[in-house]
Structure formats: C-alpha cells, structure tokens
Image 1 (tube, one colour):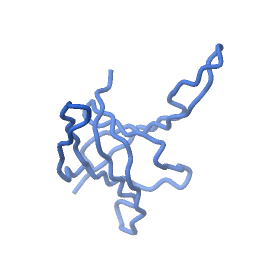
Image 2: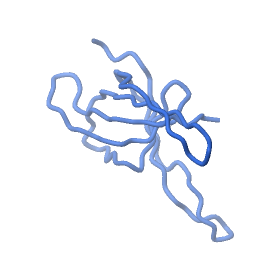
Image 3: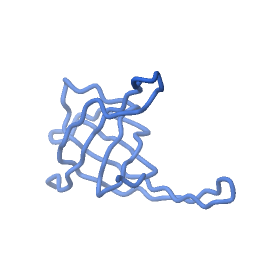
Image 4: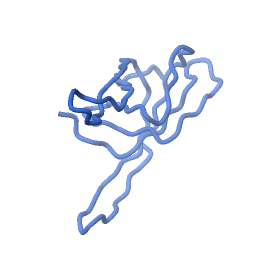
Amino acid sequence: MIPKAQIRLEKWAMVKDGNGNSIESVNTAYNMWAEPVKMGGGRSDSNGQTKLNTSVQFKIRFRPDWKVNGMWKMIYNGARYSITQIQRVKEKRFNWIINCESPETVA
C-alpha cells in the first residue's frame, strides 16, 4: 500500500519569553507522508467531564537525521496527537511505526 496521508511532525520545546516565563513553542517541524491505521479509542471521566481519546498508528520512512521522541507531536487531519511509542521496524518501505493518541484540536 502506498502512503496516502500527509502528516506533520513537530518538536516542542520549553523556552523563556522576555519576562522569564516558560512557554511551549514549536522548535522543528517536518512534513511527510504516512500510512495511518486507526487502533481504536476510549472514554474516561475526569473531574466530572467525559474525555474521548483515539489511538492511531502511523507508518513512516526512517530518516537517520531525525531524533524523534515523546516530546514531539504529530498533526493529522487537523488534530494534534501525542506520541506514546516509537518502534524501529526493518521493512522495505517503512522503518518507523509511531503510536499516537488523544487528539487535540489545532487552531
């Protein structure tokens, strides 16, 4: 199967503004193609509010100059996903399987 979805990987970092306050900002971003597979979802109750989450698995090509870890976020279909697991797989087409969950709305 040919990768058919465009995704964006973003590296988030904590930086200090002019007043000394820590803020999160995007440090590095990469656009690429991936093969997404929906793994399911869940529902949890937090402070009396119902929270829905979704798990998605992305297969992407390996790039040796990228050092992706859990501090990165992935944007897919207008939702920002947190990375929960990264696996290096030895296949001909894809070398990384990245598991993500809990979409956040992108402004």
